[in-house]
Image (tube, rainbow, N blue to C red; front, side, top):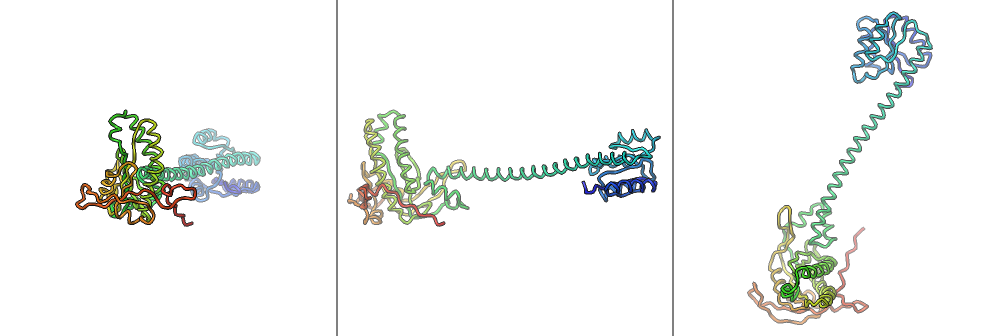
Length: 400
């Protein structure tokens, strides 16, 4: 509602309009006038008054018709209207009130009655406008809240997708590597098919086949669970890519999908850590249960093709190439406690390891004999005397 409130006085008698205008302006109201129903409708739509004093008997369009049109129009439906009529027009008052008039005055009227009715209806108009304003604000807030909810749902959905993606990646990648790939703008391109030099570590348990033949399945599963959990943590500590579990066999890849310059060194140090730390503790535990198991490891370095395979509901990250076969054959030749490496692996780390030649081996799938070596230890030692083999590579500091 305006300040001061705007009142439209409608009457076909000019003297009546003058009286209304003078009396209302004396009370501080703004007054506009109309001489018939047609002018009244035009003034209402042009000036949007806060209240209408409407005579009933007028030329062109009478007051009752004007009133009905106002109440049928959504924009003026709640505009307060006071009917002004002669004392004899009682039936018109009833018709007017039924048509939606808010009050009435009979001619001649007293100024006090006029002012009282005007003030009363303007208070109602102010309350209505307040409610309408609050409703408009509430609607806008509801729409904004709906938009925020939509954005939140989209964000949550995106985060769920990312969490699921990270969860899938964590099955075969170190957690920090999985997180980095998942947050990449194009993670699929990181895992797409490509060729790269990698170091492959393959290990399995010696004596496992005979162990499964004489042991209950529940105990076999318990041993595998301990074995996988213990080695899995160490693999991720060295940021290796866990290519697959195959019973007691484990395949680990270094230098992919995230390139690292020291991938051969990481592979050898991981292998020493698995043998000297992780499996050493497990074998003691297993012997206490009557199980005679040991760890054999083969390591090879070479080029391979890497990438995702599978279908929409199930994908795996895998490595294909002769380097996988070589690591597998070297692992087959390794006795319990041995880490058998190829010539290329030894050449990359020979200044840092103690190794003894095993001789040339005729390996299945390879035409020429392959020189192989057994790595026994890493030459550095930590101050407290602990073999550095158990020490994970230092993490690179993030640039601020």
